[in-house]
Length: 327
Image (cartoon, rainbow, N blue to C red; front, side, top):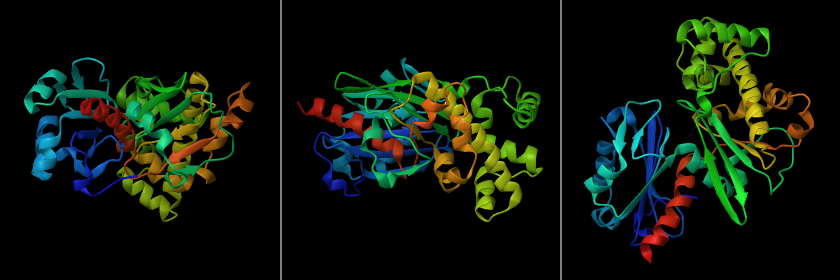
């Protein structure tokens, strides 16, 4: 749920920001956990994170900007130290320096997929496209993963009555091959990029690389997807290769954390390809992990199609911060 009414922000509002490699989504949130007045920016328009924040605050009503006392920031990269650097964009900053610069009382930063994982319980059926069957075990871990500018991975586990997100850099894990088609792709990527990692193939740029190799045509990823929607054979084959590889990697990750609570496919590329999953080899490749096929057959998989899913996760964390600031 999103609110576009800026006046609905409680006094102790928190700025929430989901900053990926390509774009950033910002909103304010109060104790209710509902993102208010969401705004989307292209990162290319700004030299760095500080300039992005300055532009966003200037665009909001003065009383709303003045009421912001805390920030919950999700970034596409590790965020556990004071110095934060985006994995797929040359932006970096110091948490302490940014908090002092803007005069915030609290500043929380975490990996974007970690924040997204916290939003999973808030998604409704309208926010998800189901891929195949399965039934979630509510006691088991959940997995969130998917391609965008890079490839993000996070888990969500229940400890007592609390949900806790776990994150890492799964997109930088080495990518291998299980058949001749994948071997051809990995060999091509190795010649082009050196040691091959998951996000070299499973990302927006990876989709374009797969299309160039198998269709012999250089297109931007959004153009590949558009061509597939028009039914063009080369683009449909690219999507088939991409989704089969995606299914295998998602199955690998699901087994790694025992994600019988459900697998949620995130990222802009996943959402753009949502209509193709059920007619693709994704589910077959997801389940094809002997001798554990039965475990994966029972694991439900959904594509997240909410327009700003990262903000939903940021808002869940931001609401806790807002409640702390209101005490």
